[in-house]
Length: 373
Image (cartoon, rainbow, N blue to C red; front, side, top):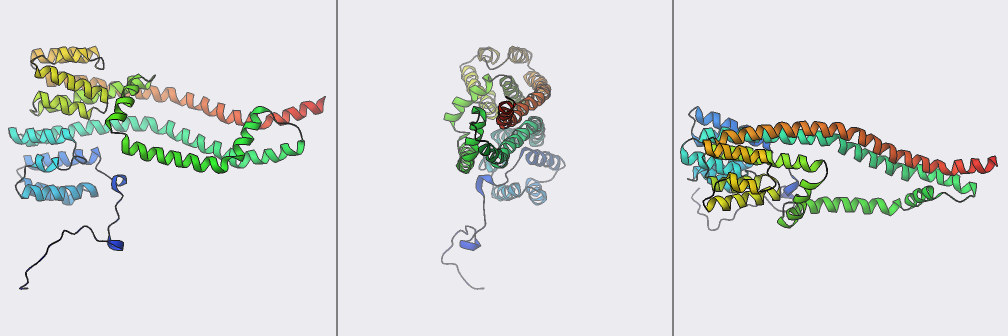
């Protein structure tokens, strides 16, 4: 049009009512299934001979995850401007985990990018399956506990006041359990709002601070020591550690860098610290099996299999077998816990609800006994 710009400003999404609404960290992110599908499709397209830019353009248009679609568009522009794929992905650490970036970087360097992407896809698929197993096992007890809490609140708000009015007409003093229920019912006007604020505030604080080092240093060791669930948490951490280390070694990532990365992705501070200790020992010229055996978080079977794999040159194979074993252990332990939790929850609900009912009927029994005399 014959015009020349005199000033250029970056558009920030509008202002006021024109601004795009964003929920920040509460918005839908990129889950493991989406990353697994993306990695699998990209590996297939690259092995079929499609160029990197063509592949990225197709995947950014086809993906159904809005967040991933936006990020892939940015990655495509960065690759088009000359950046490597791993370099472009590393600029989005929240969406692309370190293990994915490092395996892709190794694939780019060694000329086997499609194999690295296929390994990433397999790794994420197994991790997604592991998370789904744990989530399905925890859904039932969590829902039962929530429904029990709601039932208790409804009884305190609506049922206890009815009995209270009946007891006031009787004129006799209330038994201690009934008096506790009546007092709770009378104070529910402020207890419920305070409880709601504490729950919402606690969830917000946890969302912000759960990944900070101070919280993880105190909480993660407890996760491995709590009765029943501690052993399950340890198996989950070991399964992730061995699976990720096997994939990174298979992708050609240097062992020292691989140990640091898999420690960070194990999901437990104790395993992360142990992995860094092993990396420091290897840096000083030691083998992996010896320092690994000194870390109590790793079971003897893991350290023995690693030592055998190190001596025979089949570390990847041995780690994969260990990971498969612990994946099956997690699945069987989760099923056993689910079977154990169900009767315990039924007993817990019976004690809570039954206790409330007995406490409500105690004055009636007391009045009946007095009238009988």
